[in-house]
Image (tube, rainbow, N blue to C red; front, top):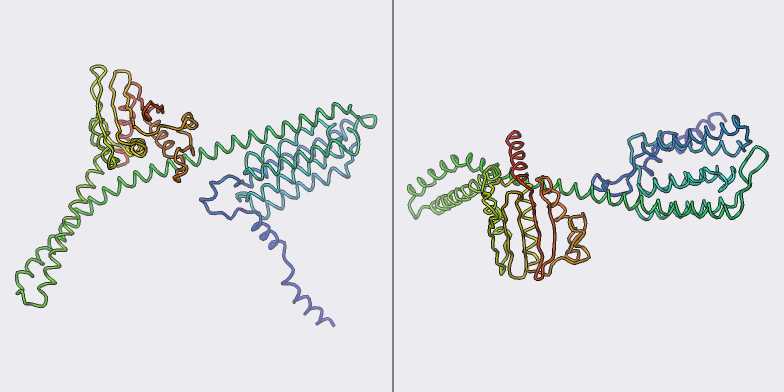
Length: 466
């Protein structure tokens, strides 16, 4: 009999989950399993932040309940209140054991925690007067936090639940606990309190979500700017590597070329290996031509950043690279005084920003793009005109903001102008967009000598890095 019980216990033991296994399964459900790229999306919430917030709420609730009951002498139903506070603390402990402090919660898991906070706070208020209780204003806290951390769907869900909890608290089990029994306020006052609480909840949720969404979009756009700048810098570095490779491979190819020529000369035309030798010689010569072109391109790319050239020449070079068939381009210089034309080095930031704006002009132009450099003592101004349809009025005031595009139907994300504006701002440039009668105009303005000073600082940084 005893042996049978031991055997039965042995068979059942693997099926019973241990506490550690339960915590691991809970972590798999709650933790965010998204890739690092997906973590840039909204709704990815750090557990540490929510845990600290909830511990502050637990301590505050416990202190308030005990202070009112024992110090003020106002009788509270502790048998109903303390278990709710303990439940919140227990949730924190379980999450800490299963997730740790550095975990990130998925959006549904974070929404579930905010829903729990609303229900727990609603439970406490239900037994302490409902809307009569001045602490009912705290219902807006979980809603506002959810709006700042979650996406639109879960923000709406939590807000609607908050309104439902506030509505139910308008009909509590009793009035506000007081020294001589219960304190009940007039019905009109309760209706006004419920109305004010609901309006505050909706407005805070809407504003918090909007501000958080704008911050998330701007952060993502700035990350895209850094990626574009890194790509431009990598292309410049690749040009230097190409020049080095062309130089290092020149000697081995010269040796192969000499040997191939000797083989061609030493073999008679009717020899079986004659054609193979001629093929080797032709391919070696082709390789030398390719490496020579790479060397020239790499040298231009590598040292072009440090070589100062007139700004009009830089604009003309970029315009020729972006020019499209059937569209004429004109680059001219207009001197308003005796100010000399600045000579600039084409750092990746400036090149990428100018190329973006000029390429946009060619994209929308019908027949012509005009680029004018205006020189004055107090400012340097570059004007880019095209004879296209102009900027849509509905987005004209928002150009330069992230994810605002005039080419949504073509798959544009609206980051090109934002990236250009951000990169140009590093050089002290002010960017404006206007519509003309026959097209669009983009104006770049550098007050005083801000452009030269910004490029000198950038050259100094790159020289130090090199």
